[in-house]
Each structure stands twice: as C-alpha cells, then as structure tokens.
Amino acid sequence: MKPSYTDFDATELFCPKCKKAMPVRKRLLLILPQGDKYDYNCAFCGTSVGNKLVKENGNLNVILN
Ligand SMILES: [Zn+2]
Figure 1 (cartoon, rainbow, N blue to C red):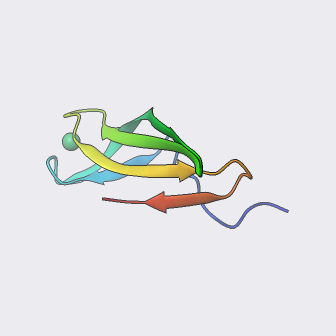
Figure 2 (tube, rainbow, N blue to C red):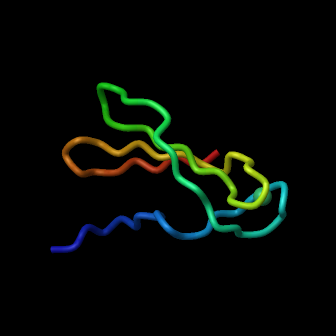
C-alpha cells in the first residue's frame, strides 16, 4: 500500500516573492519530540515557502506558510 499523502520533496512550491512555483531547498530546522521539522526555501531567492513535520512513525504533516 502506498501512502495517500504526497511528499513534496524535490518538487516546486509557490514562492510569494518570485510569484510563481519555484524549486525548493529542504533543510532540517528542528528535531522535535513529535518529529523532525524541515524548512523549505526557494532555491532562487531563499524565501521560506513552507515547512514540514516528519513524524517518526512515517506519517507526515505538511504545514505551508
Ligand atoms: Zn523565490
């Protein structure tokens, strides 16, 4: 069974500064008791375009700015 959620690693997110979907860079921001928090930055201008919490059990919570 494949998970039904979509992991947006190695994809594009809308950048408010560039005003279009841009490639993103992922970086580990925090290690929380609930999971690892990753921050996504526009590869072009560096603006934070979203973040993601990866839980230890493999479930994902995607929180976009
Ligand atoms: Zn940008």
